[in-house]
Image (cartoon, rainbow, N blue to C red; front, side, top):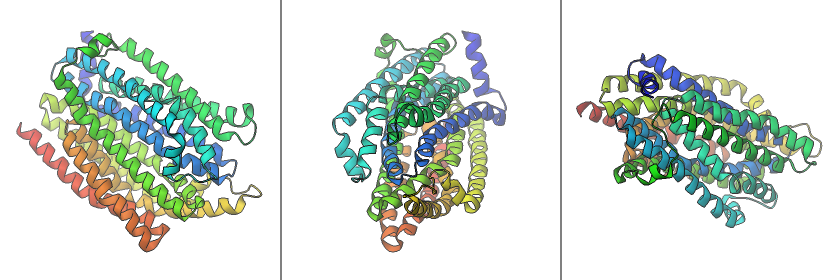
Length: 465
């Protein structure tokens, strides 16, 4: 057991920072990309129908999926970050207890979310902007993926965060990636072979539900096997013995992290509602853009998540020099990815968006072409936000790793509530769809300045303790 822990501590304490970050971040980036791909596979195959209304429905349900991710962050990022800090402080028994508390807590939160969605599916979707053309498809997807699948989905994300912060980044990523690969296989099978035409959304939802359940089972087995070499537990007794201070520490990071993702979701809801007020085709176009732009975002988030355990561990152990080196290395990598994203999408926005909607189907061709035109415009403008958007992600993840929940929450509120959402409504009113697209780079630029200030202050404070 001790040897296993020393091997993982070697990554956090002694391995050169670029190599340590590579070891932790590459599996996370791969996992993020594969999971993104499997989420996009649903949209890709639905797009083969040429049905813009099905695409609009999946855009609406994305906000509910993101809300599920936000809730999982309470126990996943909150518990995982605290786990790494407790390991860095040498408190491995309490780390074991907080891991058990996080796992059971994620199941409880997932169950409550599932019940609420089951009771209020249609009113929620109506509020999100569903029309007569999209409501039926949106209900089908929500009931299968979120009402039936919230518990395994949220537990999977929490277990992956706990494994990653204990040093098992590769195994955590393999579990999430395996579910993604399975979904890619099941999607066309359910959508075009097992179910009749017109039921493509149901087929995509069933494939996602089964894939999430399989990923959850794998991660549970992996987590159980890792307990012998890392401070991890699934024992209800351990969960009950967790110290009140640890619960406060989990919530201090987990709740702001959930709020960050939740406010991001609220911003997307606002964008969807504004787009839907223009037309269902504008909504579908925005939905395609949001899927395409998530590719570089997934790489950037993977880099940030890979850096989190190293930052958290060295913050707790007092190694400020290694903390700063990790922060700077991750920042450099992410900005390089963001710069490449801008160049690519300026030249290839239209072919990238056409991957998600067939424009050759008779009867729906005109709508499909108009949808692609909107999507291309959105993508070219919104991609300009990539570098400053990364700086916001990076600063927020670093603050969470250092246990700075209050700073994370303030940044989230400024970023989404103070800047992005008001600018969306203002610029849309002034410039229409183009203004809606421009709100992202404008608001992200302003909030990045604030984020860098908050992170710099936190790092200076760490150096003084």
